[in-house]
Picture 1 (tube, rainbow, N blue to C red):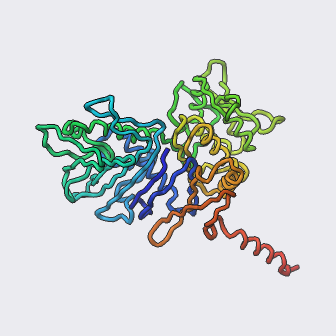
Picture 2: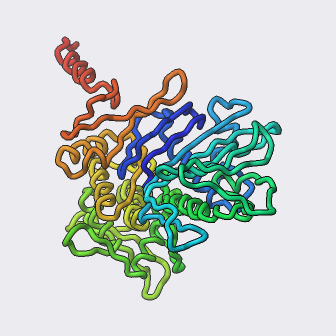
Picture 3: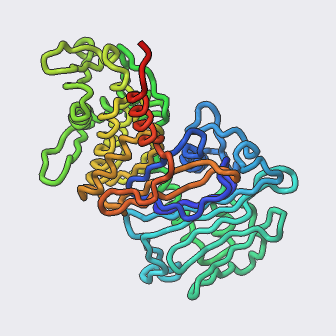
Length: 451
């Protein structure tokens, strides 16, 4: 689970320092206030890690990528030239990382369940992007690969630890070349140092972290009357939720089931999703049926009320098809995953928007899913506040932020939620001026009316 994020000079953000991320993190605020940019930063790192181009420092994406950011000039704050950028991530490991001494595998060198990564990069003299430094850390230890001098392609490896130093291999005094992408140690590090092999474990842990990141965008696919399934088992829902039916059918074939809580009967993915659709008040029943026996063509059939006729998902309210990928992703993604959601409440009526908070709490509590959600929904936020007051979730398990714009760019305000669910530093006109609207209605009602 990611616990902290910091970055500078990314899009409209001049600087964000030590942003706490909780099991449920909510980003609220006005349009174009920088909420989505925070998710885009994480997506940029993920797609860079998954890119096959080892020489590309950052992968900014295209129309087929998780996010399409253009170029470095487009994303660097103020389009500065030469531009610089930095970012840092701290996270907790699901299992303790143990590093043994290279000369004696029976002795532990490091033991930790917390890791950190930081990177500084920018344009070199020829307008090309280059890493200035990268650093992995754990409590009391830091391992840094930094560039020698303000420019050039040669680097040095250093350790900030009281009881560890890197030892050069004899006969190999050569310079270290540039990193792999923005986070990887070049192969020469392992050849030039006798005791640097453990760095690959830190690098792998960073890759595994972003391998657990799943994303669903704000614009989801229209529902279809027929879905063809060829037996595929998708890794996620797709950026627009286009693989949601594939995921449901794959989970059915695999026989996957889900625990809805302590001492409760396990449910299939379809049953869990259908239960939530019912609890959110959207439909009564939900199923996927082949159009004929042994057919690979399926229909999604729903029933609005117990007494109504069964119809296709295309023939009910649009909100059902839009929320379906959100629900499925929360229960299809492997346990311990990090799910990034943009406007999951889109096309939902207020009561269902409120219920989304309960979906997130359930996925967090029973599947250890970390949710980072960007939203405009007051109803979602109010339900989270209520659940804090009811002790269904604690203030430490939530991190709520308000994003707005000032002269210097975007600004992040941490919302302080007390044990009673109250936000003690509520921003002015956060969700509009409700009192002012009521006063205006009252004043209008008291005013004389023309015949």
